[in-house]
Image (cartoon, rainbow, N blue to C red; front, side):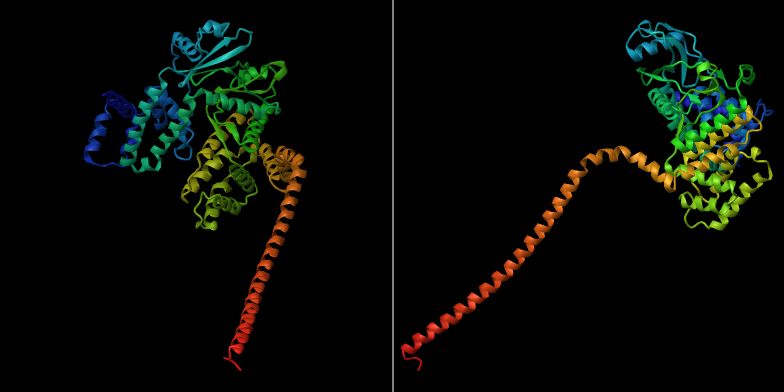
Length: 519
C-alpha cells in the first residue's frame, strides 16, 4: 500500500503539471483521450513544458530534484528548452533538524559532539538533497566543514528508484517518443550516481585525488580531508574561505582579474581532462568560489566532489584528435576517428559519416572563434552519431555537460573569452606529448622506478642468463654425446652378435668334421 500511495502521488503530480503528454503522446485509444481530458481539469498550461517538469520534480521532493539534475546532463537525449529548465534545479532543500545532525555525527564516531569539536554550528551553512554542511572548529583550533548525510536516505532512495523504474517502463511501452529517450537507461544511470553519492567516503577519496592532481598548478584549492573523522555518513574537511564566483561585482571590487580568472578556469578544466583524465564533473557556480586570502589571492576554490568524471588514455586521445581535426576542418578525420573508436559500426561508410559531421561543424565557422561552443559542437556530434547507431559513452556525456558548464561560466566572466585560443595550444601540446621523442622520454620517466629496481639486479640476472645459456649448451652437448654413445652401443652389439655367430659356426664345423659328419 505504501508503494501504491507514493506511485499515485507521483502519477498525479506529473499529470497535474501536464507531463502525461510525454507518456501518452503516441497513445490514441479513446479511453486514454478521456483520461487525459479528465486529468486536464484545472491545470495551468501557461508555463512551458520544461518549467512544468522542473516544478513537478521540486514538488515530489529531494530525490526527484536530484534526478532532474542528473537528467540535465543528458543533452544528447532531451530538447534544449527542457535541459535549460532542469539545469536551474538547485539544492535548496529544507535542512533537517540540528538535533538529528548532532546525533548522526555522534553515532558515526562513537563520541559526544563536545569531544569531537571545540564548537559546532547547529545552523547548516548549506542544505542539499543528499546531505547538509555545518561549520565547526576542532580542539586544536582548525576550522572544518562537517558534511552529514540525510537520515534514512537509503530507504527513501530505494523506494523512489523502484517507482521510477516502473514509470520508465510505462513510458517506454506507451510512447514512441518515450522509447527514444531511453528512460530505463536514464534511471539506471541515476541509480549509479545516487548510490555513489550516498557513500561520503567515496567523495572524500575523490577530493583527495583531485587535491594531489592539482598540487603545483597554483590555480585551484581543494579542501584537505581529516581521515580520522570520515565515515560513509559523515566526513570532516578543511573549511574553505572564498567568494562565490557568481558574485562578480564583489570579486571586481576586491581586485580580482576577471579575464585571467576565466582563462584559468579553462586551463584547470583541460588539465584535469587531458593530463589527468580525472575531472570535477559538477562545476556549477554553487560549487566554485574564489579565494581573497593574500596567500592564495585569485585562485579557484572547488567544493562538492560527489560527481567525478574519468577518462581512459583512449578516450583522451580520441577527444583531443577530434577537437584538433574539427579546428582544422578535417571532417574526414573526425569520421575516421568515430569508426576507429569502435563506437560506429565498422561497416559505416566514411564518406556518409563525413558528410553528416560536416553538416554539424561547418556552420560554426561562419562565426568568430570566440562564439564557437565546444560543448554544443560535441553535443551535435553525439546527436548526429546516434543516426549511425553509436552508443555514446557515459563518461563523454558527463564531459560534455561539464564542458558546457565551463563555457557558460567562462563567458559569464569574460564575454570575449576565446575558448579555442585557450584550448588549442593545450591540446596540441598534449598530443605532441603522446607521440615522438617527448612521449618516449615521458614513458621512460614513468617506468623509471621499475628500472631503478632492475638495475642493481642486472649483474645477477646477466650471470643467471649466461649460466643458463652455458648449462643449456652443456646439456645439449651431453645429449649429443649420449645420442652418439647409444649409436656406438648399437654397433658394438651388432658386431658382437655377428662375431659370436661366426665363432659359433666355426666351432660347430670343427665338431662335425671330427665326428665324421663333414669331410
